[in-house]
Every structure is written in structure tokens, then in C-alpha cells.
Length: 307
Image 1 (cartoon, rainbow, N blue to C red):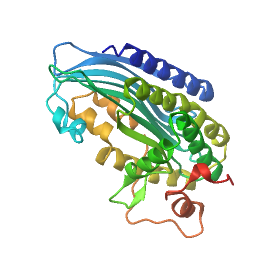
Image 2: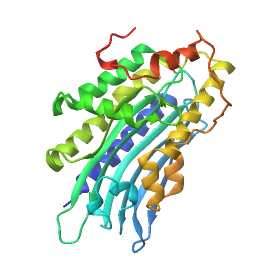
Image 3: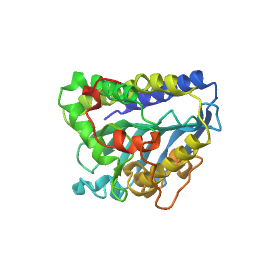
């Protein structure tokens, strides 16, 4: 099976997203192309695009990777034990943007294809991806906009997918040890094989193509809002939840580390400045408390009127 169209799409998606963020913030992303020597347990290539210390993004990474391995790692066979031990091929684009202004939410997006290559059998191919928003200070109109763009992107593939993928996102990006969501969610799907290769690839393109329309209007509305030390302190505190989720629960991080992936690229999602406090809670009635009471809970954002 020829996966060249998937690779070409992903590289183009990375270019489009990075160009849009460079135009919006004026900060140039570094490009770090890498490759692994053929013949090893993991081979392939990729392109990491990164900005650090920018005026708009304090840290932001948008990675493309295309790898082939001799044996599927445990994180990839948890739901498909019959493929354990098979060679594999995987490629995707993954991004995390940590803005400098606390009123701009952190955003994550990932689209990917995975192919198990069992001997003597056709490849077993599935797609995964999604995007989710992690605000520090919640705005109803931002949350509604983000979810409506996701809903509309999935609509051509059937009305049941957005509610299903939203619920999956709410469940997946939940910090069990904190008993709280990481943010206001979005959509998430994995191991998607329904409708065959063309259907799954088309759906994944729709999600990837929707990212800029979902995030840029929010960034543009909030990037110049004045803020001070209080807002900055809360932002760095809440970033700790992001670190906890990625290192404890995230399947993509686990897959990358278990498969012997490139550590610098895998951990590019980590925020640059983070703080933890012992047994801290916001004072009642504050904007910080409102994040917990009004935003860090599942809501039908796409069906609600923006405030």
C-alpha cells in the first residue's frame, strides 16, 4: 500500500500551520530536520519546527515524523494484541502551542496514520487525531467557537461523529489523579478504521484542515489583552496539569518513548515555565475560580450560545 499521499498531506499541513503562526506573531520557527540510519530497530525521518521565547508563543512546536519499526510497542497494541510483534509504519503531525499571554489558551492538535505490517497479510491501517483547548482564563465565546469548528469539520462524515469524538476527548484528557479535565476538550479519536482507508484519511484531513480556523480567531481576540503577575502566576500553575497529563497518560508520548523515538521532539510539548503549589485552591468568586466552576467540566459547547 502506498502511503505517499498521507506523507505529502502531513508535510503540507505542517507548512501551512507554521506559516500562519509566523505571520500572526512575527516569530520565526526554527527547522530541525532529522533522520535515522536504515537498518536499526527504528528508522525514518522527520522535521521539527520550534519557536521559543517568542512575543506570541513562549514555546511552540509543530512536528512531522515518519517512522518504521521492527516491532510494535506496547502502547500501540493495547487494543490490538493480535498484532503484537508485527513491524509497523507510522506518520503524523503533532503540535502544542504555549502562548505568552495568559488569556490565550494553550492548544494541542495531532493527526496521524498507523499501519501494522504482519507477515503474509495485508497492512492493517488506522487513523487517529483531534485537537483540544486548555484555557487559563475562560471565555464562553472562545469555547463555543472552538467546538463549533470541530463539529462542522466532522459533519460531512455523519452527525454522530462529533458527539462521539467530543465525549472521547472529554474522557481521554481527564487527569484521574486530580479528578479534573485538562481543559475544555475538543475532539479525539483513535484506532479509526471505519469506512476503509479513503474514508479515514478524508476524515483526518478534515480535522487537520480545521485547526487554523478553530484556533487563530481565539488567539487574535486575546493576544493583546493586558495582564500582570497574578495572571502569569496562575498560568504557570495550570501548566503543571499539562505536564502531568503528558508524562502520565498521553498515548502519543508513551508510544514515542517506548518505540525509541527522538526525545527532543517527543518532549517539545512541555511548557517552558511551570510551577506547582501544595494543596492550593483559588479564592471563591475570582476569575481563577471561575475556570474550575464554569469551564473545567464537560459542556455542550457547540450547542450553547456564546456569551
